[in-house]
Length: 210
Image 1 (cartoon, rainbow, N blue to C red):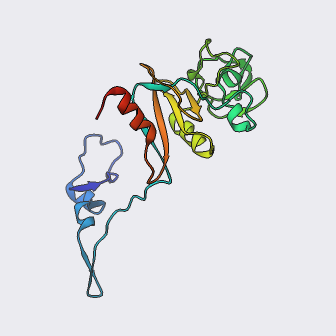
Image 2: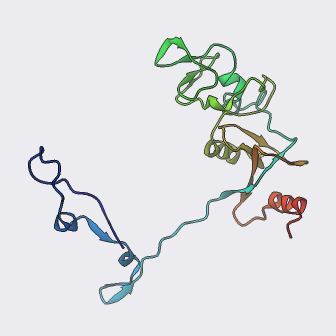
Image 3: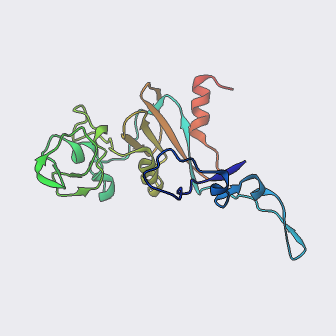
């Protein structure tokens, strides 16, 4: 298997139908399978093996479920980086503006740059995760999956994430005292490397999976 990139074709720029020959690409092609073959160095055989170290924290799916209670408090949390991403606070009905043009009030339901009603500037608000049912007391966060996971990882008391399947919206959980079925959410169960993913085991028992 060879991997390569196209080299610019030398010649008149107005000749649009000229095709590059194989020789023009040869200098920029690499034999990808040969990368894993043993090589000799000072009489010793060396083998290159790709390494993917296991992350300290991993997240596994509990498909079609959410934790009904035990949300991390995103309304009165002592950590500003949790409170600032609460959907209603960041994307709610209060006037929000586009940082590129302070005269232009933008919709609460669109993604893009945002300044919230408290003056916090977000390069990306992820406000497509907001809807009018999310009141000021709801713990929903308007963030994509990778940022929800990163936030949960940073909090010692966060054990899982309820992640919306289509929207950048999640809830962080301190526990999962009741697991319920859902067509819209999956649970992302947090675990330290090498530990048992207890929430997935509970979900399997609930679903009757041996």
